[in-house]
Structures are given as structure tokens and as C-alpha cells.
Image 1 (cartoon, rainbow, N blue to C red):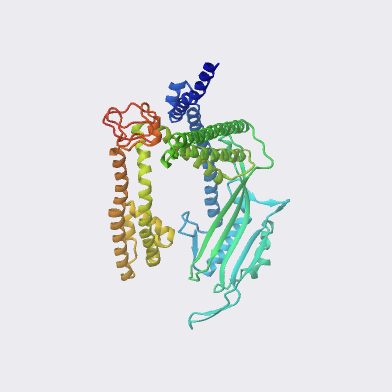
Image 2 (cartoon, rainbow, N blue to C red; image 1 turned 90 degrees about the vertical axis):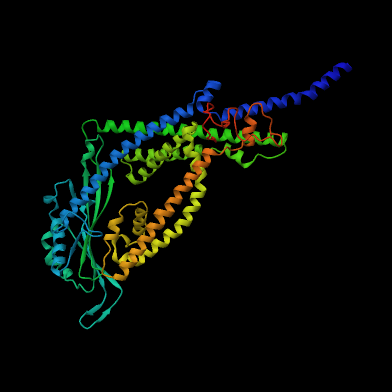
Length: 554
């Protein structure tokens, strides 16, 4: 009995000793498997790379969906632009077909202003006979929506330019007149006093009306046509009181589903196919997001196990570098792209079903998700050493580049404000802050240099000389110094990544076979493998050429 008791006691004492190496080896194997590439996981456990297959399928489907939506959206954009051009030719007298910077037509006499106003009214009253497109007056509750003409002017005013005297009430008033399209014969007789204008008090005249149209060209692409509501606004701008009245035509178009429609052919059937395809895209994106979320949860659990192991065996916490190895930013990027793709697909389905018309919002979601999906491909290219250089260079250079851009941005903003306030009155590229920033950015890239110099007006010799000093110093500073330093920072990061051998982290040492953890003091691994090349622990490509010195990081 005593012998049996002693045997049982020794067995109970040795159990934790034998289990602890098994737990350590199990943790090591789980960590190795987590950091393997899809091809290595298949070779190790014959597990099919479902996540990789889903990502490849998602890239193909999202790109196809984007192309189909882009072709459809292109028809919508072309229809709106052509209608805008048609309305300008219909309602603007003497329109040349080319707009100026901020207006379409300019008039300089009182009679020309009156003639252009009546021309708009006459053309509007004859729209059914003049327009070659399917456009007509808009109606609501069985009644046609009227045309509204408003004039805004100073309340009181008296100006005598010869004496240099004026008496102006800065407050403005707006008087409006509504005209029915069917009462064209009585426009000028009943409302003659409305068109008696005091031009020295007149600020602007605005004519607005609503039309309806049908985009029939989508039938050829096997899609049901959309009905459009066109809100047309024609403005006679006299705010400057410079003797030049600017006439502009703005068009705000809103599409919607037609109420009574019938199509013979395959358009409706093709729409159903597109809806099914979009639904399948949503399913693939949901699958991708679930798989990536599952990988993130698995990484957190492995990190917790590894942290407990380090605290129990080595009595210290896991360092931040090793913790970041478990937090894979690519999975977060994929999940964000999946969410945006799902939202964009739902909006696209609503547009195809004619329930909504948010083309711009849908384009933003689909375009951004496609961008993120293609950027996510870099993750799989990173498993190959030759392609991983780009990722490592971007990671190493990004902090220095951001700090450098902050310093260079201060100088850039200074030149932007200076150019706007000094050169704005003498050059069209410097009229606004945004235009100045765009002009300077084009100069940094060597674009449009000579026209920028040549288009400066020489009316003011002092400003002309200042413009030369301004442009020469900016181009010399940014092209020859700032841009060269920017490239040098990236080149330096690339050389550092290519030539430096990084020491292995504690996690990498733990995963290495035949190495105790941690290394004894005085032993310097230096990150070198047995053949003089880098030891690649967290990457799938173990066949490394002898002369390749690029260190891969998961």
C-alpha cells in the first residue's frame, strides 16, 4: 500500500511537468499555423484557403459590378450634360456654345437685357414646338407649374456719376411674378410695369421654371428609362454695376421612377439578372467580412494565450512589437471595404429598382470599396520577398514623410496666401485660394510653367516684377529642394530596408525550432539564417536566395 501511495504521489507530481512542454509545443504550433500563408496552411494541414478564394472571387465580382454601374452612370451623366447644353441653346439668346469662366452670355445695353428676358419667356411658351427631345412642362395635381421671374433691387437709390454723389438704401427687395405657360398672349400687356427696370438699383433678375423629361437611351442598354425633373434657373447678374450683365443658366436635375410605363423586350428581365448579381455580391462580401472577423478573434485569443504563457514562464509581458504582430490591419481594411461594398450594392439595387436616385452616394461607396479591395491584394503579394519591399518601404518612410510634409506644408500655405492676395487681381489662376493651391501644385510637378509666366498682365510693373520673384523662388525651392528631399527620404527608407538585418523579436524567437526562449545573454542572432540570409519566421516564403537581404515582417 505504501508503495502504491508513493507511486501515485510521484505520478501526480510529474503530471504538470510533462503537460507543460506539451502545452508550450501546442501553443507554438498554433502560432506557427496562424502566421502561415494560405499555401503553407494547405501543405501543413490540407486546409483549403477559403479566405483567399473568397477574396479573389470578391475582386472579380466587385470590379464587374463597378464597371456595370459605371457604364449605366455614364449614360446618366451624358444625358444631364446634353440637356444642359440644349437648354442653354434654347433659352439664351446669342449663346455661342462656349461658356466663360462663370457665365454663359454677357450683355451691355438696357435693351439687350430686356430682349434677353423676353426671349427666355417666348422660348419657354413655345417649348413643345421647339424642343427635339422628350421634354415638356412639369405639372402637379393636374396643373402646370408656373414660370417665376423675380427681380432684386435696392429699396431706394439715386446715383449721379457726373457729380460723384449717390443715395443708396443698402437693404434689398425682391418682387416676383408668376406666369402660366398657357397665358403667353397676355404676358407683356398685363405685366408691362414689372419690366420697367431701374438699372442703377437692379441687383439681379432670376427666372426659374420646371420641366420634365424621359431618358430613353437606357432602353438600348436593357434598363428601364428614368423620368427626370429639371429645375432651370436663369440669372441676370448685375451685382457689380460695371455695365456688364452676366447671364447664367443652372440646371438641377432629379431622377425618379416613371409612373406609367411599359417596355416590350428584355429590359425588365436583364434588370432582374442584375439584382440577383448584386445580391450575390452582398453574400460574398458578408462571407469575407465574417472570415476576417473570425481571424481577428482568433488572433486575440492567441495573443491572450501567448501573454499568459510569457507571464507564467518568463514573468514578463509581451512587448508592443509582438502585440502588433497579432493585430493585422489588412483584416480591418477588408472588413471596411466589405461594409462599404454591401452599402453600395444595396444602393445600386435601390437605383435599379427605381426606388431611389442617389447615383453620387452609390458611386462613392462602390468606388471606395473597389479601391480598398485592390489595395488589399498587396497583403498576398507581401508573402513574396520581391514584392514585400514596397510595403516595408512605405511603413518605414511614412513617419518621416509625414513630418517632412508638415514642414513643407507651412511654406506651401505661405506661398498660397501670398499669391492669392498679391497676384489674384492680375492672373486668373490666382483668383481664389483653391485655384492658387492647384496652380502651385501643378508647378511643383513641372506642368503649365510657361503659360503661368506668360499670362501675367504687365499693367503694373511692380506687381509684374513681384510675380517673377514669386514664381522663380517657389519653383526653385520646391522643385529643386523640397521635391528632391521628399524623394531622398523614400530612397533612404528603401536602402535601409534592403541592407539592414533586423534582430528577431521574442515572438519570432519563440516560433523558431531549436531555440530556447529567450536567448542567453551575449548571444546575438542578428536576424541571420543558416545560409547567411534573413530568417523568415512570419512569412510563407522560406526559400530565400543567398544574395537577397530583404527582411520580411508579417
